[in-house]
Length: 443
Image (cartoon, rainbow, N blue to C red; front, side, top):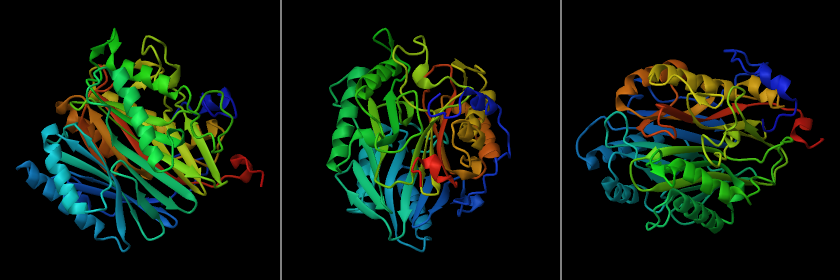
């Protein structure tokens, strides 16, 4: 188990979730939900206060079901209305568009150019139909205030610099159109993403979080599947990458890998994106989190993938007193086995239990970092990928009961194993106070 300083004994102690147990961790109060519950079905927003920088996460779907242009205009009007309530200037940095039809992308791009002008955010067009039947759904990240310096390096890269940290957002990266195999597509897309990061003076070794949207993810290919071929290419590409080697990490017996989601898409071959960080600050700690009841993905047996998936279940970054925890795509898996086959309710509950256990203060302590962790109230947003449209109502009801008012996108997509019906990812922001020794500074 990566990054555990205190050994297996403490990891075992974290194996059972303890709802309400915080190990003395104070309520963070970093994430608030300013949007009205009455409008949460169409638009929802969370506000994350991080000292000099405020981040906003929004999810929007249209209420109407008319022409695509009408639905898109409704979504953009909703976005403008929410952002106009902010007292400080707001810049949209990254947006992900979930489309029912790939053919609607050009019209959507034209509307974005009209709306944003020269301030286009990094944009991912993901061909995953919104579960609610809309033509599109929109997830948006924005920053508010005047403390951040924002720079654009072409359509695929944007940086946000604030308080000695430079965040690099990269997205919308596709492989060469003539490539057909998942292995070749993945290698090409990763190389293109590294080149795009290079435009901002960055490189892939600084990546903390990645996304892989793969058409036909469970389709057979090269005596395995397209997902397994993606894993083979990812392993090949990562072999010489020393991820985040400039940031302090607790002693780790395994290579560090970013948090990640690998999920199906109904068209467009492959789309990749990432979040990277550059900083020379000393008050930084980077932690790869594993779930005590799940086998680390990079240690899966060959029967699951000839080359194991190279990602961490979650990655937590402590910057000053603020902890950001990126939760990888999580499903109903215990140890290495899929659980609750055919039962969407039990799979959803198991998936959420896995997330709760993963980000809990108990699990942080088992990884050698006490006084840190997150709970569901610290989530800024989630994405829920569903294999079957008929499962939406049951899954959404469970998510509302367990997660509360967290902004959420529900999209139709195949999960990496055919028997898995749901996958959930998210990001949490929490406050923590660690002794200087835990940061390795010795000060």
